[in-house]
Image (tube, rainbow, N blue to C red; front, side):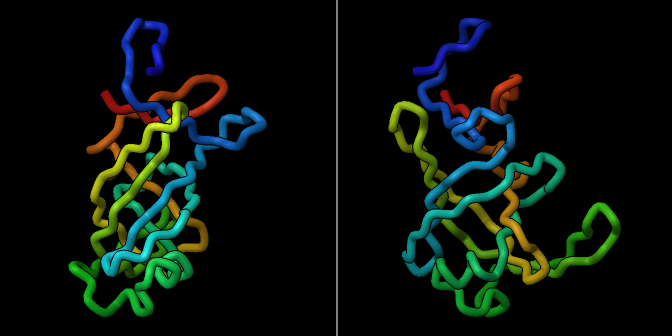
Length: 143
């Protein structure tokens, strides 16, 4: 269990960032695609993104050879500069292993986009975990 300064104890806590303790919001996960293929996926936590956006390489590693096929939703998002990005949503299952080796899993409707270079984990994660930031790291927590 992880205890924070306010005394709250969380049963699950995962630190985001590289082991050299720089506060970069990257997290390593295990994601299972719709067909059951599971792969490790690293992505940047992007609280400005309304939805998790994964690239086509990640889609392929999860067994989604053509993200346009069998998508449960297709839509267009826009980058900060206004560039349109078409995306295709698939149901996936995310697992994060916490600091004490405790796994936490949740379903997620992840978007796959050809124009996304690096995987981005958006605020849709916040339905499942809390987010805390300090001078050393970004943390995901769950009671």
